[in-house]
Image 1: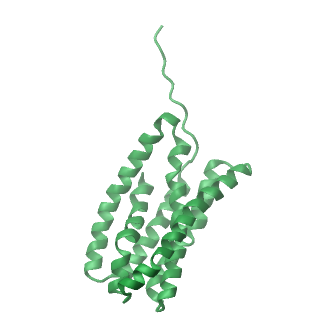
Image 2: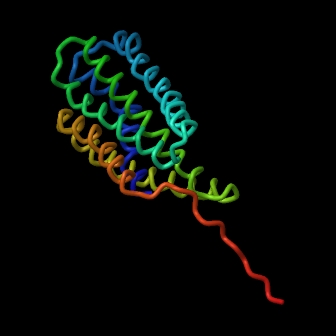
Image 3: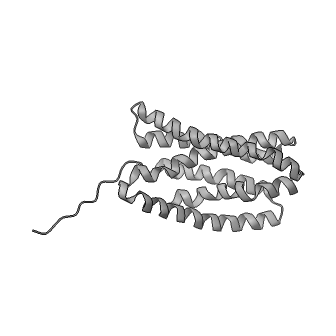
Length: 192
């Protein structure tokens, strides 16, 4: 739950704040935003599929679920700091390239974290565990989006990009310390 508390904020930033950033800070026109912003989201979609495929391939090669998920989390978190560089480049094409790399890495990380509920819980509890984790993510998003909004009001997008690039890395570090293995089944005893 702590991981989702941090993770979901980055997703909300890229969904809701990036158009404002591109328009106000980078001088993109609405036509440029409409013509180019789909590209990073396509890379995000590719990252979702790739993250699931890679972790499944690692499991098929005989490694544990925990090793597979953590390997994907570690590898993908190395791509997230590219988001910090978005503010450092001038050419719109490089902004899109760096955003695409960061969103690909974020998606690989996110799909592996979000799948942990299915790895841990018995089948009858997966929905409950996923719902609780989703709630934690939403609470974290409200908190972090409030901070991001205040920073955006002050046009402090470099700080925001550092924040949203490093929150998922912190999430990966939390997950790397967690045990990812199925929980022992709950057994009831009946009185005789």
